[in-house]
Every structure is written in structure tokens, then in C-alpha cells.
Length: 150
Ligand code: FES
Image (cartoon, rainbow, N blue to C red; front, side, top):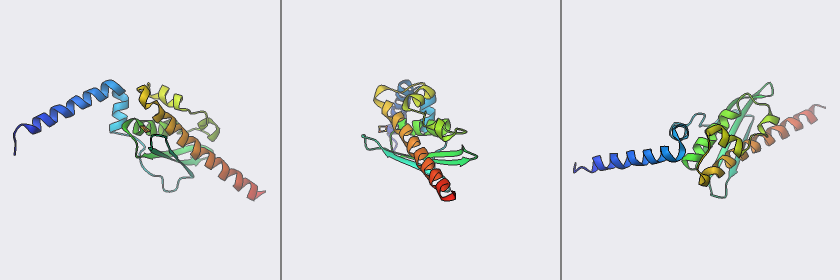
């Protein structure tokens, strides 16, 4: 039955989008709704999976070539801000050496994306922690391969 509820739904949706853009900014809103690098890398060299105090999980996958990140991806069951942070983290890491990835912090991600509302800043830390977990795994794997070869 068409009783105008479609029009009301559309108006509510437009209002929600307007408020989200005001709260997060156009660029972050675009990342939330159209996240780049979301998915799985089946032949990843390492992955990092971290669960935050809020209960959300971020997984980051890294594929290296010649000591630098050639491909990266993320998954999350978290909020829109976490989706955006996972996407920015996967972007920031590309072309980087493992040691440089350890320098990426939640603040780096916040700087990169232009900031988030205070209540979402921990989402950036969660994404950075997942990156660190992945790199630490990769470095341990490389160290054990080197030890086996010696
Ligand atoms: Fe949990 Fe965003 S609210 S990571």
C-alpha cells in the first residue's frame, strides 16, 4: 500500500545521510559507504585479527613483494567508522616495509582521514593494531625462515 510512507522513508534516509556527512565529513562518509580494499587475500603472507573493547573485530591481510606491501585488504564487523579506518589502514600500508608499518598508529590513520568524532577515535586504533599484529606475524615468519636456512 502506497500511503506516503515511501516518501517519509526517503526523507528520513536523506536526513540520516546529511547528519552522517556532517559528523564524519564527506571523505570519511564516502569511505564508509564505498570502502576500498575490503575483502580477503587468500594467499596473504600474514594477517592480523584484533577485537576491540567495543566487541568489534578488524582483520588485515598483507601480501609482500620484495620486502614491501604489494597488496592489502581488510574485513570488519564493526561500525561505519571502523570500515573507513580499515580501508584507510589498508591504503596507508601499501608500498611500505614492515618496520615502517609499525610506525602507523591510530593517530596516523586519524591524520590521514582528517579526524573522526571522539567517540570513534578508538576505531582507528583498532585498525592500526590489526596492522601491527599482521606485521609482527610476518616478521616472525621471516625470522623463522631465515633461521631454518642457516
Ligand atoms: Fe567498535 Fe568502531 S565502534 S571499532
